[in-house]
Length: 221
Ligand code: ADE
Image (tube, rainbow, N blue to C red; front, side, top):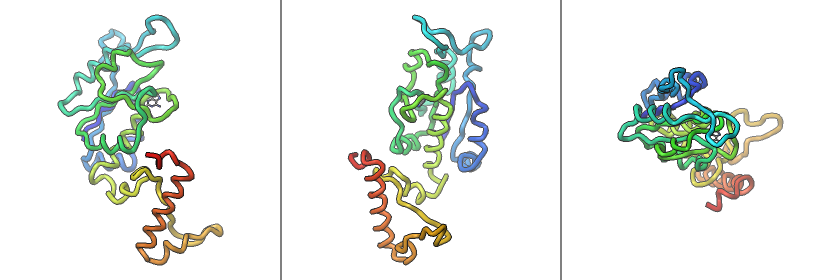
């Protein structure tokens, strides 16, 4: 899989690409992640990428030329172009699964007060990571990339993501490790008895209980 991220702040991605599971996925050639500064595509003599809004108002608006030229340059036949914006559809685990099957994603990180509306004409999908406003699309692009890359075959154990929260619209069941008793809190005895059927039933019922308490909206789905 190839992921191209268009940003004005490439340094924000340094830690993201050089640590932990994303680093390993890149080393194992499961994914190629290119960070592209779309300022490099600006035809303005001073490499300007923004301007004041027509009709007035505060803040600067990203101009269409650098972003649209960058996408034209990077686009392949398989590319899906994603724009990150609080106005987009809300991101879910189901969307992560679906995007993890794509061959090529181009992710555009918005910034400042917004972007010229005409940029929307070249995107396939607009995504928001939640109902709050961030200073730009960089963190959302990392959130989305992380959630997708861990689902690519061979990146982490399949078993680990089959048990993820949100699969089957359920939150995860509680897990424990050693020691058996810590600060007076004991590991539930059912997990110690080696009876796999009972363990499975306990986990299912705990996942359901937790989902009912914390996220009843998931059960309605
Ligand atoms: N840019 C700013 N806030 C955002 C959000 N919540 N989701 C996606 N992109 C954004």
